[in-house]
Image 1 (cartoon, helix red, strand yellow):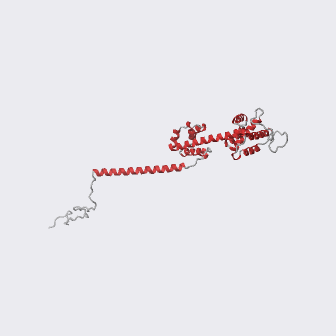
Image 2: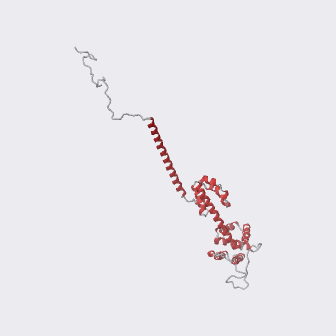
Image 3: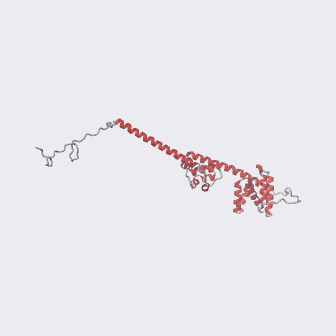
Amino acid sequence: MAEPTDDGKGSAPDTSNSDKQGVKGNPLPPEPSNEPPKVEPTEEEKAALAAAEKEAAETKATKDAADKAAADKQEQDDKDKTPLDHEVWGTTGHEGADAALGLLQNAGVTPDEAKGLLFDAVSSGDLSKVDWKAVEAKVGADKTKLVRIGAESFLKDTADRNTAIITEVATVAGSKENWDTAAAWAKANLDDGVLGEYKMMIDSGGAQARFAAGEIVSAYNADAGNTSLTKDTTEPEDGDTTPGQSGEAIDRNEYAQRMAKLHQRGRVPAAAEIEKLNAARARGRKQGV
């Protein structure tokens, strides 16, 4: 006699492991793993691993910092090679001074800041007035030394040059006292424009300074209210043969050419030669030439 089935139709139940009919048998065993068994690290191993990771991070940070410092240095080195922008900064006309300005420029200092740091002191010729700590804060200790060397060189060369110019104009005038007298008179009596031109020529030194000094001395001598600074010779110049001639009268161009000739090749003319030439120019002024 057949046993009844779940559906009452006499069919035998499916007892396989298949779940095709919705009936599950015993679970299958898991697939065997080829992975080694997981072993938890000891506390010592964890500490060693953490130390290794920290050391690696510190090494990377040190390398990154070194790379950044090298890149910054290269950038600053490239910037330091930037020539002075004369359109912005102008020029002193002195290589050392312009180099000092270039250091300030390339350190990011503005012309107005540089003026506040150095201008008044350099203009007065007294570098003790410079706040060197403030300069160092802008450009660093090493570059501050270079800025100071440039400023000192500028002042020394300027002083030497001014001494040479004073010697030249004093020779033209006959003495430094004569020149001081003529220069003071010119400042009070000559037109500002003319005086400015003469000043520029004197500041240029050389033949231009001698020419301008001669013009100022001649103008002084031509003023009837002044006592002549030079001996007004009545002897005729070479080529002047007219008996009793009071002396040659020359114009500005002739005066400049002869003055330059007297000083050619660094020759220092005798005071009598200068006096004679100045007297000739003074007579030229009186005659309107």
